[in-house]
Image 1: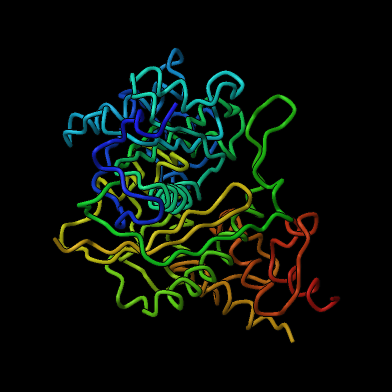
Image 2: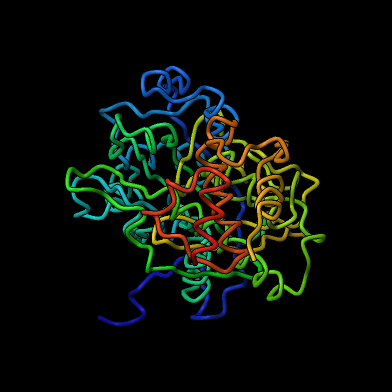
Length: 327
Length: 75
């Protein structure tokens, strides 16, 4: 075996010399079926005004029971391929953010996705076990990996259908979560560059979001609320210091869509108000998909600088700046 | 030093559109229209303003102005 027998992709760059890759496109897949959250709330004896004004989710997207996590991921990637003319043979890597893998997580769900999509053998894949902070952490990890390895085309996929683990009788969680998936194409000639980032973990509260002995999601609402209300503003303050800018320089703040109340509370605490949008009312909290859904569907062309912050399971947070690329 | 007026100010700043001056000292928050999420937010604001930590096991019973004031005065 000699090095001259190895055929390298035409776009290959030597280690560490790749130009900066960024976000070219994001596509979203949401199942067509939804649950009427007001009707569900009535069954669980939840106040309808509370659902509308505080939870904010009027409908929750629901996958078909026969669909698994890999199917949602595949659907998002196929949409990306069609909407943005992506040829699978170009792909160097795929990172899948999920904490609800197919089967018991072995093999990794990204390998199942790789098989279902017929991706090229050289396309490396792995799963990232993160929840609501997963997209921003995933962006950072994927971009850094691609840049170090000279990869030209990569996908960051989020697919975490909580319908697999929700206790339908638990009023604290049953009215929040929706199913969905997103696929983000990371490459050169991109729409968004990743700027400063800020991450962290408050692990003394790691049991605040977990699964009980029956495998159902269990949430300490007060602990999660307090964590978000205190750590997110602190993270954003540190992020802006790293980026050497102020909130006045930010056009849109994309916060994880945990609920209308947490978004409004955080918007008030950081002073972002109308620049921090709540847009998940028609489909629910889609975990690591919530921020890329906002990026794909709720970011106007006029926005030049974004601030993203995901927070949740871990309990962990991840914040970043995205700057629109000038072509 | 916690006082009734300071707590009313916290409640008014925390709960959008709420008139805390009309809140009776022994009126249960929920009966006054303060829901569970607003209650969490009030307790967090109280913790931050007075530098105290309110354990989960104490939080549910702190659902009137008097209960909150008595609790803070004892800390």
